[in-house]
Image (cartoon, rainbow, N blue to C red; front, side, top):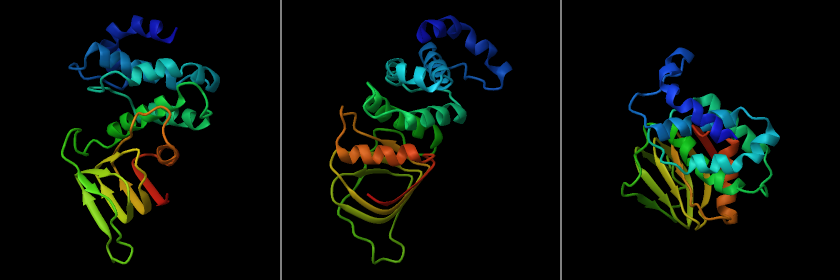
Length: 208
């Protein structure tokens, strides 16, 4: 079992991590270290075994995310395997809806932390404006309506199940929060597919 194998390495991981070129902070908890190791090991599985291991991945993603240390190669590998996984595979959507927020929070370290009062953007038509909407370093709630010509940098983007029609939207170094409803509605599925197809650090949405 993946989790059993990882348990044997948790208590020596901090001591050897510097030797493998990917040091873990000494302040990281054992749970965070185990979560990081689980993500790394699952990322290295072949496609078939990866799909069978989605329950273990879901469990790891459900743990607290403080001090999680994973490199871009781990995130890239998991993303690539999720792209190849059928959407009807058990635990696929719960994994995707938890992985995207975690992965984007690791890559977009300058975005606001969770829990801040958001600016609500809805029904803002800026197609006729030269500059459109520019937001940076803010928490943005996208909840229903229409939003055109938006550029967001170092933002925390919060989606709800209420569909927002987006056109010419560009997100740079943003964290994406998605509702964890299982199964998600069609709008959240579309957003998730776009995010998985991107590298998360730069996401362009021409129309949705």
